[in-house]
Image (cartoon, rainbow, N blue to C red; front, side, top):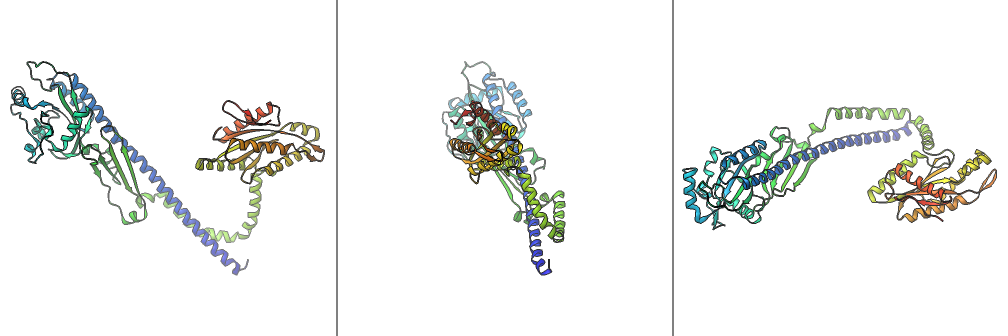
Amino acid sequence: MTPSRLRPTLIALLAAALGITVFAVAMLISTQIGRWERRFDDETRLLASEVKNKLDTNEAVLAGFAAFLQAVDRSDTESARRYAAVATAAYPHIYMIEVARRLPVDEENAFTTAMRTAWRPDFTLKSFSELTGRPHSSHEHTKHTWPILFMYPALPESHEIYGLRLETVDYLAHSLALAHQNRKPVVSPVFELYEGGGAYILLQEINRPAQPTAASLNFFGSAMTAMLLIRTQALVPAQFRSGEAQAMQMSASLAAPAKPDSLLFRQAATETGKLDSALLPRFQRQIVIDSTTQPTQLIFERQLRWRELLSADLLTTLLVLAGALILIPWLTIRHYLALDRASLEHERSAYLATHDLLTDLPNRFLFIDRFEQAAQQWQRYGNAFALLLIDLDHFKVVNDRYGHAVGDQVLIVSAHRMKRELRAGDTVARQGGDEFVALIANLLEAEDAVKVGEKLLAAIAEPIETSAGSISLSCSIGIAICPSHGERLDVLLRHADQAMYQAKGSGRNAVSVYLSAGPVDAAR
């Protein structure tokens, strides 16, 4: 090959090598990005699961505490403290357990006097505006008030909360009214705690039969509201608190009845570089926790970074590709003529490896590839297809009577006739011996496969001219359809084989379709 003719070839080869290398690099990076995205999905599911477990725990603890209050003595505050201590110790994210008693307004003075005598000398009923100095609108409830009487743990900074009228707290009034109407747990909007920090309350009204006034103090009364106070930061997954999720950004919002989409918390990710943001994807996922009482929306974001993407393995592979970019053109030109000759030999070898030498039909390996293509078309577009297992009837008699040379002639003619009767997109392959298998693609109805089978019956039934004279024979055909009779090749072949033996059992020269209850003869 002269230099003038070699130069365009060299340019083309260099361009091809460069294109392949760039494509390989792109595929490697794409694979790495896919791995990081799958890892991101796994992390978000784990983080969401941790938050959901805490929300479910809140519901369970509140339900248990409500049942406890219905059963405990009306003045047994010590048992209530022990119960609350066990619950908060087992579930540290529950900041406080509280109880507010429903009290008729006309009994306020007598109740205050009794509480000062039997419980706290400084007890008084107070509104939220008195406690905080913030103005408050008129009370929504006029006949009853809900003073807070029980808190665990009784923190010094929360001492002023005793006696606070719950209905005067602007961000709790609506939730309290919902709990009073529905008698089911209700979640409040997110708010700032008196002692600092964000929180929300899960509350449930509890009623029990009234009893005659006893000599001792009736502390809890017959109607009360049990409350779990949850610090929003306590819901942050442990990975963020330990610093393991610095690259992840996470925010959680609570869909409260009175104030939708209250922000529970937002954990920011560490800063990323400009090249990271410009060239690499930013993963985003939104997960909704469909909790009965605390519906929560979680939003996760993560900016992929080059230092994460370019692992040692990837860098090694990139160096290998760079070396290949230099070596491939040189080696290709050196062996250009040899490759040209080898190409023809390779094509011949590939053909022989995928086709039956006697009949020139596809062999099992090529048929498996065609089956996988048909299966992918079915999975993607819903295009059904059929397998036809074809067995020549009494072929052994032909071999025994006329010899294998004549038998081979019969096989070759039969193969050509079957190939002739099928469409270009269908495949018929030699399964082995006198058994063939056909794949009918894009099948609209099962009857279409039966019609193809009948055409094959007619084609095989035509006399075959051989060196020993004219020979007539028939075949038996079993049909299995994907997905009705299976989805895997081995299952469909087994079912088609059963249907084929059903055809032989019915007298041969027949087409039989497999059914779940057993193959059914579909021919004459």
